[in-house]
Length: 96
View 1: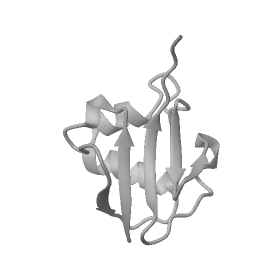
View 2: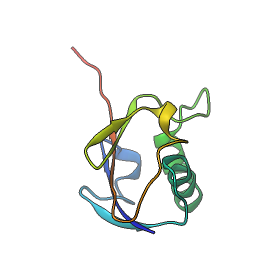
View 3: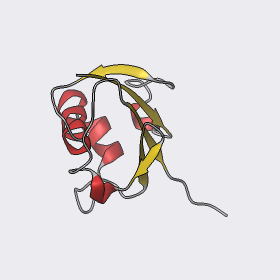
View 4: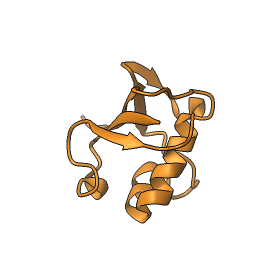
């Protein structure tokens, strides 16, 4: 399946995924499978960017947007992906 994927605020993987939407093909059907595929395909830079290093689970400081709908990390396993979906991973920043 082909989707459009974008990463915003991820300096560790900026060489792999330049700014903007990029066509990406994978065989899964959920957000969770997409994350697994990205880690398997691109290794440590993606793993370090998407996983919390202490818990080894998906980093809760990342917002996922699928076709302009926002999802939380707890919804990764259940949210299905369809051909042509646009998925954005957005690193949430805190500051004051």
